[in-house]
Image (tube, rainbow, N blue to C red):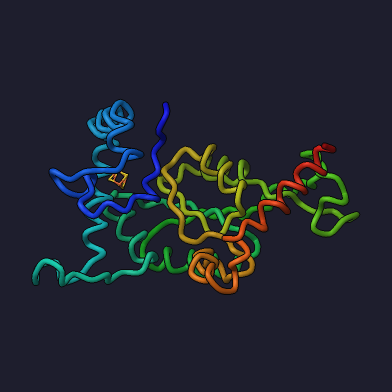
Length: 239
Ligand code: SF4
């Protein structure tokens, strides 16, 4: 395919994906991926998937107040904590799984208590569950956070399988690392949502780097990180 979808670069005002009769640029994903989007429509036609999507759409709208006042008056009214609980209740989920990072143990404890106080059964699994040293997956001592000591690996597959065995109906991630979250998402059987993502430096608010990318984090826009990461990756591979 000559063109590939680049919605993030779209500057069209009257977008085809947002307005009937709208248009799109030459890299428009709506125009380029007709088959994929047709396939997506077929997925929503499946009753379970369609109902999940329908409830998610209703929940989305219910996160705004003032919709009944006038068009344009509506405004956001519910934090994500509330959104997650309302959606779970809307879907009839009673048993929730929480997969969290040990670095956010306190936050996870408060989060789980709130879920419990609000009537949910909660099963939780911390990232280090199983207590397996990182050497088991081929991590060298000098690649550990604290070399030459027992250092349990993050075990997102273990977290997923624990929650699968507990038969949770809906899983929620709290601060898993990049890559660990990917494995959890791959192995979890129940649907997953994210309450918090990890950013060790920015207080778990990764968007802060975007909001400040014209000032304190402008080095990212200047591509400096690319040189560093490419160099490091090459060294690691021995190139
Ligand atoms: S689907 Fe097309 S119109 Fe919509 S944001 Fe993407 S590129 Fe723009």
